[in-house]
Length: 242
Image (cartoon, rainbow, N blue to C red; front, top):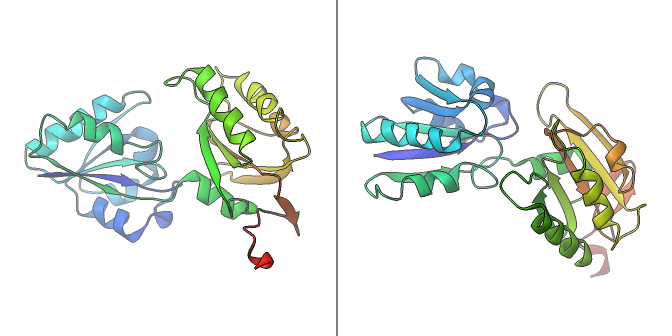
């Protein structure tokens, strides 16, 4: 008995890894957030689909566990990579009292790497990925992480930068980062990465709050070495200095 936690990547079925696609196709039951299940609906034909709305992650894990205990092959899907802000961790926790149920994780393309490819090569050196959502993490802790990442001169990739209910966080995050790097630092945004309405653009750190930013936008802020090369963001690793 096994639950396979599948990262489906940015959204469409053609951006899934072959391993992820195969895991869904071989399953009897597909469990996931309704929006993400809809993205791979053609792969779910003939399968039992169990879905919920947002913020019901534990419920989805329990659904998956119940189906697996009944002997069904289960794929629990989530966007991006299952282990990066995904469902792999919570599924392992929910399944902890049932060691007879195996939990296998199938990776996918996370928003950071997909967005970086659209912008050029901004993650060519050390970087940090930080979510600005304070639903599960205290805002003061998020600011501390931003401050330390900026001080360490890491490229910073921001997830969940703004929503209808969270309008001030991005402005505060940018102000925090600008304590350690100039507003002219190269930056970029990618909205709807890999989905309909995809939009990407380069800007500066100071300009980020004015960009078209919402929950489906990924932001990348360069370090002291990041620059634009023919319209692409590039963070050199130093190969030319060897």
